[in-house]
Amino acid sequence: MGVYDELKARGLIAQLTNEEKVRDLLNNGKTSFYIGFDPTADSLHVGHFVQIMVMAHMQKAGHTPIALFGGGTGMIGDPSGKTAMRRMMTREEIDHNVRCFQKQMSRLVDFSDGKAIMVNNADWLMNLNYIQFLREVGVHFSVNRMLSFECYKQRLERGLSFFELNYMLMQSYDFLVLNRKYGCQLELGGDDQWSNIIGGVELIRKADDKEAYGMTFTLLTTSDGRKMGKTESGAVWLDPEKTSPYDFYQYWRNVDDADVIRCLKILTFLPLEEIEAMAKWEGSQLNKAKEILAFEVTKLIHGEEEAVKAQNAARAIFGGGAHSENMPSTELSDGDFTDGEISVLDLLAKTKLVPSKGEARRLIDQGGISIDDEKVNSVTAKISKSSFEKGFVIIKKGKKVYHKAILS
Image (cartoon, rainbow, N blue to C red; front, side, top):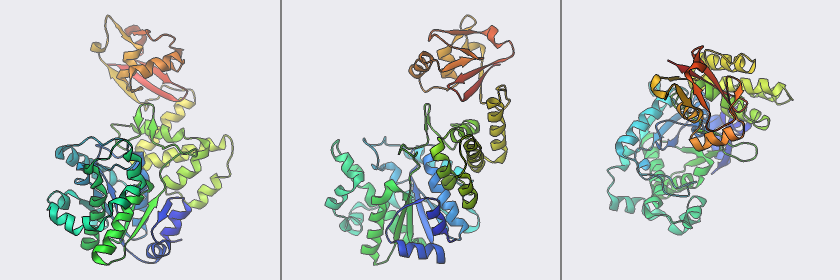
């Protein structure tokens, strides 16, 4: 099976500019392709995971990935999918974030010996001559057509700045630069990038009279259309300091029954025949499929050792032995206590089990917090140092989230 057919069978492909040409190029030829990543945070998150998996599949098939980091476009910010203008970041912030992205991406994509290429569009965007850019690039774009694209239409009601209107031109120029320098024929991206990708394909045709192609892949959503990768405490990050390997594992272990097979196809390298066999499983068997999904995905991002630790911790917890050494934990010091006590609200904030004390109050009111198997019934409840006689307490949030608070 060619890589195009593999990607299609896994449900990854959303839209293409020329299906026949792209299929032939990917199944029967060798090409370089690029995906852009704007460094808006210091870690990639689950939303980027699909893109990295596509890069890895394509690389295994002999194609050359170009990972483009938006050191230049990040200075503007993509308006796609946003109801308000993004915060403007400093050059130092962007450069730091790019370094973080490069390190994380190298787990799944091999950048050694020219097998993949890293570029930063700051190298050609930051020193552009504006008049020259308008004459070479801007002349090929119709503002009327740009405003008909969904990425801009949804912003017109609230206000779209000229600042952001330039984003499509810059991303399109990226494709032109990579086509000229590396012979890059194909731009890939999430389906929310369709308009920007079309802009690049058309710019290459108009400016250089060359053919280039675009392909988008499905966004990571649940069966009812909600974006995946969000929890009560925020995004699911690939950085273990932001989302621990255990919490990362648990996120995938807890996906809905309706989503597990699709996630196995999109986010793992397991053979399709093996996944199709799992698709016939029902009832409690699906818990085994979820465990396989969680292990495989955690192994890809954090390595096999961390995946084994997370799996053992989860099994111990769900088996009733919640005092696992691999459970996520937070150390408390004497300074966290006042008169020998710490409020449950402060404890939940300290362990970062909730994003705010307001959320903590809501969970307690709904009976969603237990400490050492005792349900917390009051938002004013406090825990004394004497409760830490064994050195720790176990906090349970909801039915499936456990955390160990250790008195150091």
